[in-house]
Amino acid sequence: MHSDFKKDFPGLLLKQLLWAAARASTKEEFVKCMKAIKDVNESAYNWLMAKNTSEWTISYFDDSVKCDMVLNNMCESFNSAILEAKDKDVVMLLEKIRFWLMVRFCKKRESINKWRDGISKQIWDLLEKKKEVAKKYHTNRADAFNFQVTHETDGSFVVDLIALTCTCWKFELNGLPCSHAVAAIWKRGLNVLDYVHDYYKKESFIHAYEVVVQPMPSSGKWTSSSTPPILPPPEYKLPGRPKRSRKREVDEPPAGATKSNRHG
Ligand SMILES: [Zn+2]
Image 1 (cartoon, protein in one colour):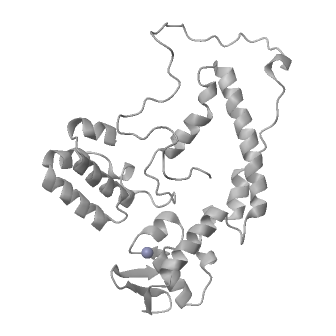
Image 2: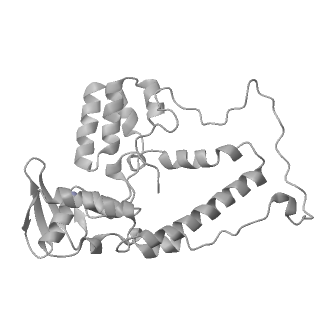
Image 3: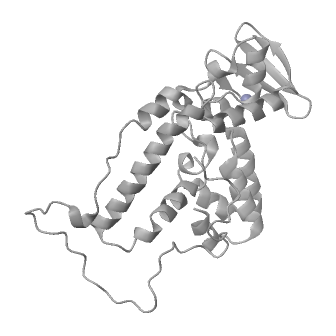
């Protein structure tokens, strides 16, 4: 979306403001970010407001899917995985994807043996970070399940351990207790792991990867079929060497230069 946006509204400041609005986790923060954009360029503001907010800013994401991704890293990973098969015919491309899924599903099933307390290492590490932050809060109870969690500089947040919500919105968005929720859970002497959404649990993971993608012999050993073969589309000779990689925007980092770890 930023690639389209910058054609009409170039410049670093607008780029930074757009990303701040995209990463805003609450509606209040989003309104503030959009006001900053409006102050700089009203047309840019109108351009963005015409877009469906649930498709580009975390603050309006559907919290039933428990995902806060605003980057296309997953598409990039998929693209790089099928890169060497992209210019093969359809059957070979599908065969490459089948092989890749067979190996991946098997590795994923085996990785469960390393899980601790029914959650993956990535989720475990995330929770540990939240626990570190939670130590800095002052937590007060309103009743058995409602808490006001306060930080010296960030102010107060409201956690509801029945509705599983926090006013930072990250609790319901990710399905993992945010640092405020961790503080509230501790205040009640409860177990943080009991507040992790089922999507992250071992049972869900096993269910997602339980299908065994079967091995296959190489294509020369396949049984022949009486149906006509799939023909390739007509060939058009284009000038130069065919491109295999996705065309990147001029300000996009080169392949493999992303900061985040794509593992998992
Ligand atoms: Zn929170």
